[in-house]
Length: 301
Image (cartoon, rainbow, N blue to C red):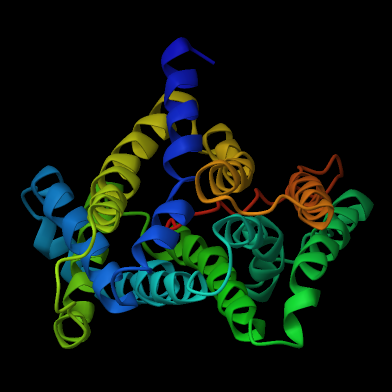
């Protein structure tokens, strides 16, 4: 990989590893609707001028149904659930649970009709990944944090399903145009809820910086660099950074928010990471292997 490719790769590891930290800071000062509205509106405002092109509206009209489905599964639903879950869970744990997306993606593509045999390596990966998720989730299922865990699993299902829709139904839509239009749609959806729950006082500087960082850095800039990374190294190699994001999320939470780094968290990280790598590995069999489902942003993610 070229030096430019490595720089883009390192940037994506950081930019899509720190949103969990920023969300954790932001939800302490504003409501979930305000957070999601701010992130999507800022991101759309930055990306729309870059995505504007002749014939763009015609492309969007021709694909509005899959675009709506993609936006709902990638942004509108997940970013609400993710932000709401972080009101009660640590940012590191959130990042680790979302790291299960590649594992869930392997199961999702089978629901969409893929019949490729998984093989022992990928089955082992699925088992290890699910064990890691259970290790994280089990202590919370009997208490008040059970619902946030369910919210994050729903986010992971959405993140795993949206790329399948994009690959099958939105291949003709330019990536930047698709992202900008989906962010715009999400901002419109959250406009009224954000107005109703708008803070009566100006949030703290940390909260405002977190909201700005989420919208500009972790959404707009991250998407632009993501598409550059795909052009530089190809989609398969570009998605490897998603295996590093959980480590960034956990490290940021420990160093900047004082979140605990326990043995179960470390063990779950190893299990989920190993499981993701094995579950999405290409098989050396006569039957052609199905490419791993690309993990989207936290959001992208």
